[in-house]
Image (cartoon, rainbow over all chains, first blue to last red; front, side, top):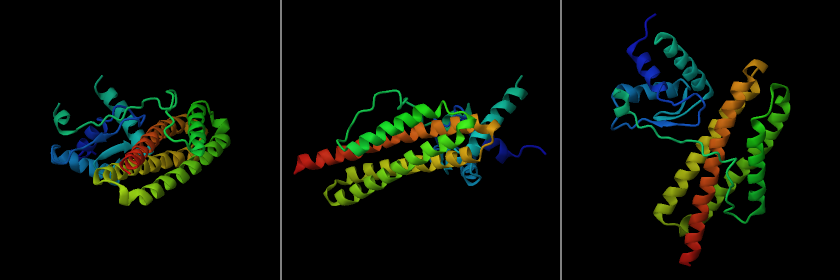
Amino acid sequence: MPFSPDHIAELNLLSQFESSSGQAGIKVHRNDAAPETVEAAERLFAKGLITRDDGGYLTPLGSEAVELTQKLQSIITT
Amino acid sequence: MVLKHTVGVLLVLASFAFTAPLQAESSDSAVDRLRQESRELGEALREYGADQKDQAEDSINRTLTALDKRIAELEQELSENWDDMSNTARERSQDSLASLREQRERVQGWYNELKASSASAWERARNGFSDAYETLSEQWNETERDLTLDDHKKSESI
């Protein structure tokens, strides 16, 4: 099953977190960010991966997702 | 990178709240004791192994219960001082408490993860909890500072 544009936007947003450690949060500025990024944040929040609908911090599930995203990125870019 | 222009990254980097000397902004000895307890928990968390899960949970429970009580006290203080505060001070205090509650909620998520973790997942859950707890502790100190600052301003104006 190919990644949908929504999935790609979510993966890109997850990759904005510096690490899976959860010590750094992000904020998606609704007025400045691309609509797909704003919507990706809302979906990630709804799925329980981040603590706010405009970013915030990674939840335990989000932390795991970032780890997997980083692993996947590492595999496909080598 | 396109996202660089679209996403503002708010760095909330850990400032090692547990290793840096904490300033005592309150003379309340109960708060000072809680600070000490919180610092000790932060230090101990990194060392707990999977075989010390029960001990870790006991320590976490004790400290989080005390911290919840302190958060309730801060909310009560804000409520009591509300009429004497400027709009700016009200907004700052409310924002600070909201951030504190958000961090507390996040810590709870990691605590649940920690309690449910198997031995093999222990280290990941412990590190996640520890990071979240560190940020909570940092925010707590900031909120204490914010509300104490408001108290000082109020007493100066009387």
